Length: 180
Image 1 (tube, helix red, strand yellow):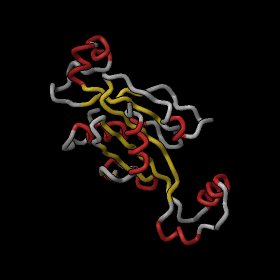
Image 2: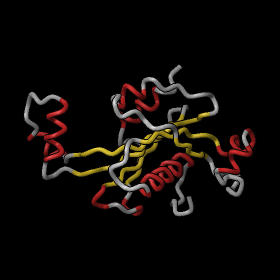
Image 3: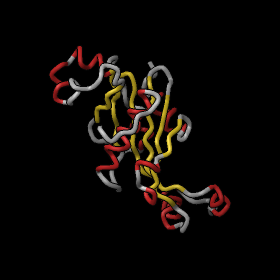
């Protein structure tokens, strides 16, 4: 995507490209899963697909191409769904974009004890300090990882935070999809 800022690594560029794409869809979106494929290999192995994706005009060193997968089932918990995924060899990595509510660390002491998952989710949703965040996390088979965080209240490409360990639990769950 032309508005994606240049980044140091192909993985970071892919994360930012996915963040920009999902941002263009607006908020209150379902989780979205992407396969990451080597762009040069995609061009060589599937030139017609690469052409449909507009990759023939991309520079040779463009790195990774995200390919959105089928919709994630909403009736199944995300961690259980991720446990059912197996990627074919041409997929070198994967990414997930998901929205969540977050509280600042100072709110941890305020959490009432004994809440089940549903009541805790309701409590967080009603908390005055909650923030809506979109997390885009990507991993490669070799263990490399990167992520982007976008707050709804600062919904701008210049306000996106990136880093390899921003969402370690989700990165681990995605890495596990490559376990053999």
